[in-house]
Length: 67
Image (cartoon, rainbow, N blue to C red):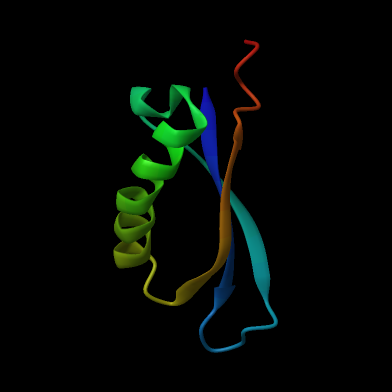
């Protein structure tokens, strides 16, 4: 399983950033599935966090995959 990794920054102060990890749906069992699911998830996240902007993103194996 893969997860979405994003670096997000405050719009008011672009130097203040943090990393956000999001588990995606069952579609994210492959890297390609993660890339597809990530688009909608980032749009949803951005609508809920209007004070931040997504600086960069990637898909990576989920840290909870072995659990």
